[in-house]
Image 1: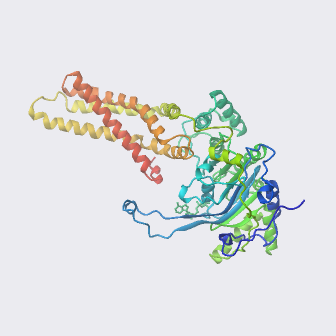
Image 2: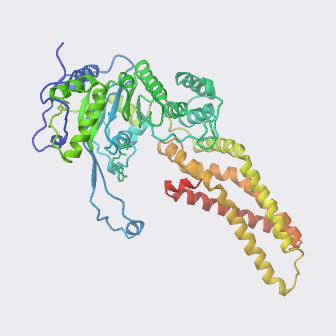
Image 3: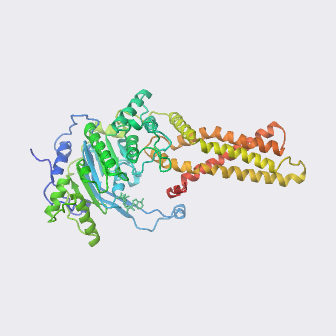
Length: 548
Ligand SMILES: Nc1ncnc2c1ncn2[C@@H]1O[C@H](COP(=O)(O)OP(=O)(O)OP(=O)(O)O)[C@@H](O)[C@H]1O
């Protein structure tokens, strides 16, 4: 077989010179590379041959190629300097330096490296979770089609973040059903139900379908099951590329192995392209990994199979201790080298070949541009649908936190009777003006303070909302409208429960119109306070979530 594996020699002065591979030789291709390239569409590596479509599942298999991807962040200035439009004086930090790799379909590519090396950042960039300004349009290719905007990547890639970000008061099935409602809008409810059932089966979740997801406070499903639900939420629309940030973190070894086995079987049976980051995988987990991308300080030090890593370590004259696997040993070498010489020079070499014109595959371009994944068209769904689904989800959550809402209504009643009895049968002369002002001041502070209790709920939901909104499940405005629709009648009930005892015990103006106006003002105050709490939870830093 003529090897399609070719050596890439960067031209002097080109950014590719920074792409450094520690565990490789300068001229030979690793077996892993060969297999990766053989597996991929060979036309993509040969500019002289005409573009060919894949024979199997042409619209559903994607090869993700990253070419010389660098990512630099500018440090945020203070709020005041942004308000004054002052530029930050702190230097920019380059987190990723000329990272290149290929992730083929039916394979798992694992990104490994010491903590803080840029694994999560790399996944965030290739999943399109960066702004247009931060995205390099010449660094990401899908089946030879250059991706020019992050939104194209968001359409095509499923991204499972490190944190689970699930609503604890929904069951496993409800969580997946809501995700299906947001993301499979072209389907009938029966089709969605079938999709959720088959996904639960695939993820091994059918036995816990009706169990609550839970969290640290309310025990629900196990950590491994929760991780599988997170994967299911982001796989509901069957994306051809799945990116996972540390899917095994916090899991015991058997749950971690189960998750990787599951991903491997998904990659193989559905020809999915899977890229994940992982910390210290065991030997058994490594068996399911097709290729490893080892990063150090944001640069690639190895890209290839475990076998090629082992060979390259031996070639460098090291002997792998019997108790360590090649990856563990490689990590030890990296850490020793990093400590000895922080800017140690890697052997400059990359065996990826990127020469030749980028072949424009018009069929793929259409799929990428329009986000047509698995026949799903998100665009045609109205905001009304989003609002309706969000209302029903809100209602479920409120219903399940009924103790809190019951406490709120009791508080309004007790507050109303309490204040009423303090100011009972108030006089109607000039001398009672100060008393009336006192009553209104107390009422106002009571109504404002009682709403703050909802803050922990909003804070808990915020991560979920931000995640869902960032992947385009719904618009933030739909969330706000749904929230208001559900809260309006509830807050109206609170207003009546407070206004009735206060108004009539105190003996304010006995006309019905005046009473209706008073109730209306109370309702507006609690609404305003509730909106303020929502606003506070939206702008508060994430660390503030520790309050509950
Ligand atoms: N928005 C940001 N502002 C400042 N520094 C950042 C930002 N994003 C990432 N970094 C820095 O970039 C480096 C890489 O971060 P990243 O989270 O990608 O590392 P990681 O390899 O995933 O680490 P870990 O394995 O511990 O999760 C870290 O030093 C981190 O502090």
